[in-house]
Length: 99
Image 1 (cartoon, one colour):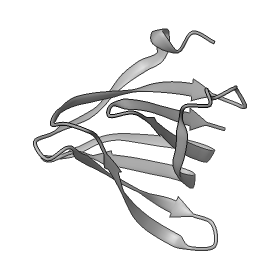
Image 2 (tube, helix red, strand yellow; image 1 turned 180 degrees about the vertical axis):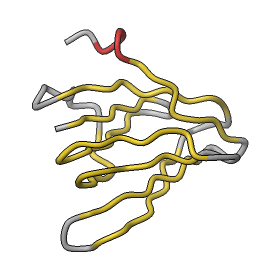
Image 3 (cartoon, helix red, strand yellow; image 1 turned 90 degrees about the horizontal axis):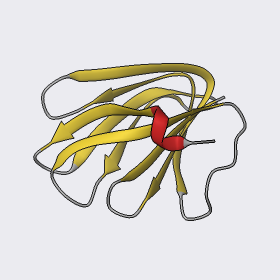
């Protein structure tokens, strides 16, 4: 899959953090911090289905049914799927996998 064609804006921050919220089976409503290595504007590769995630990406969190992203100022984006997995690599690499 060519990840480059599927990047989407997921927010910006002056403190290098986005907030993820969503439903997690067995735990209910959850908040997670998505850390980046520097302040700025962030994008993520959006992939659908069971596809290979490169080994240098680490699974940060998984939500079920829905996930919302907030930056410093406002709600940015909502994702819906049976499972939403967020992976990070390095200071800025991010993949959101919708299954």
